[in-house]
Length: 336
Image 1 (tube, helix red, strand yellow):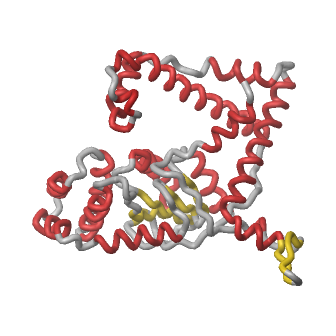
Image 2 (cartoon, helix red, strand yellow):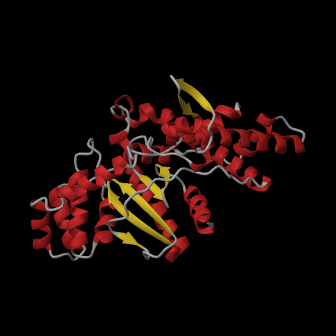
Image 3 (cartoon, one colour):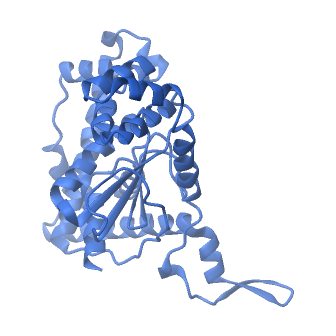
């Protein structure tokens, strides 16, 4: 088992409907280096200017490299303590944590994800691709187990990340949960048709349950162009918000992502006790189409390129990351 590529692959996992890579950000930890890296006649270009231009991309390279260094060192130390090679040590901890994938679990995955699977899999009967799906799901389970093991080793080693993440100013207008006076504000850019955003919703529920009034969560629309129902679904959320029931509609749409046509949205409005006629008029007239596009524009200007995307007090988090990722940034912000 080659730990370096594996650790790096874990870091690169960012479940999202498109990859995010803000470019207009610069870390304060990168600023202030006046080393001259180029000259234009007598005019210098400094390392600080170069770092600022590289922005978020440079930070992400440093973050991944730092994580890889930490992972390698803590695993090496832990393995040495029990007189094992690193590969044997990790394998021994991981294998007993990888659950077997049953045929029923594989079939359930196949049925629930058929629309998103590659044609060479989706167009085949389950029995023809069963072994491939079982192998793929087992690989996912193993990868998760490796990540969990390494995180536990890091916790025991007392790892503390001091590399400062870059921050970006992003608007906080939109439906929200939590007080405006909360020390931490999370701005979420999301798409109701994006399956990864549904996972992000669940993580935000965990955050709200854990931190309560310490955190404010703001929802902003970011309908992706290749999701044909996303724009209208976003407008439906705004129409529901007009009647004070954004979060009820928000939850319904994420729970029913395959039913986001206009007729279903109008039926949902009545299920959550909205004024149906008022909602229908709002949705049909595209009353909030421009407001949704304004969110999309401002998200793009902040560097969002896919969903879900989050800003925790301005610190960018890409994709439907696990709760622990948000906990790290929230705890850091609360401690400031």
